Length: 467
Image (cartoon, rainbow, N blue to C red; front, side):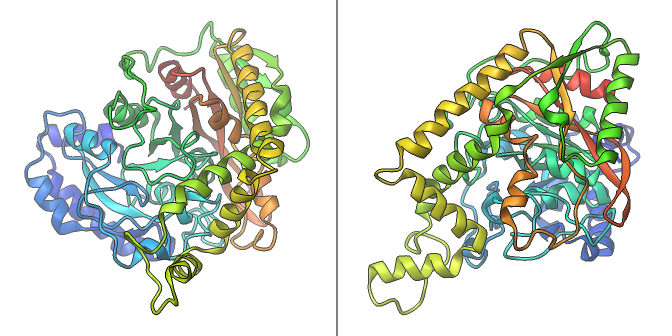
């Protein structure tokens, strides 16, 4: 059930927060072995929290699953990595968790993810494989694959994820749920284990656009603990949710509809755009000319920031520590060798290289300049249109292991989502039908809607019309 439906039942006295948790726990026991979305869940602690739930609050009594890179006091926070899986328990609540609790919600469950959020399939988790509930032979997407899979499978009412290059929107598309990446600076990142600090953003994965708006309402807003969080007013995201799209201009970027898109994805996205046109939206072709450089730019900037952020995982302060090192340097080497998986190592090496003496200007410096050009593309587009509509991913969910020996192919699959993170703008994936792909049938596809910076209210309004 959606948040809004459960809230109605709670307020009517038809159920209780404890009963919802018990039912969810039963669904997890019955279904999660097939999907592998949950790394852990603490029913006993959640029941205690439920006993004090204030049903008068906007999310009063609603359990929300949490991606395992967001700190919750007293709970594990593994980031899908061996480095933190053995002996790290969070000593504090992330700001989004504090805000969810202030709105009455109950954090419940730790969701699987690609290790340190590095991946697009949840295949890079060092702890377990998460499968798409629509076809267990396929990926759920990533890196927030556990969050998306649980919401799609009915083992979570909604969940939080993080999006660095599409890690909320892409799994939402693959699993057939709603996934919202807010503007950079709209939601505090304090308590999110950093991957790429200029790109990361926390957002909801939900069963409906209304649910996404309700969660964003709770977690958005200024936080002095995060220097990148903006001190600007937060609008009421529910007020105009059903205002429709009549009179709005929606841009269709020609660069997002070229070769390489699966015919079923193209058909579903174009049909969704035409339905918006039938509701009164004006469809305008636009150009985002620097799109072709987005993947290269992202895979310089993100690994560079990851190389810096992950230097704190050294075997000294917390997390995995190698046994019997020869000296302090050997301790660093062995702890990181044993603790990090191959994709994390690949990105640390790449990031360290592009930041190194003699290469900084040629790679990282140039990538930042191209990032500015990409942002200006969007700024120019939003002077002409209210929002941009496109596919989320070139194909539906692929089979598990299909790109095991081809990481570059995996990187290229993020072509339609990366630019929003580079530009800092909000984006949402809304289900737009199913299609057949690579032997699979009835696989979900998503419509991506992108808006101007801090334009979440209108973005949600358009997404509701599409829904």
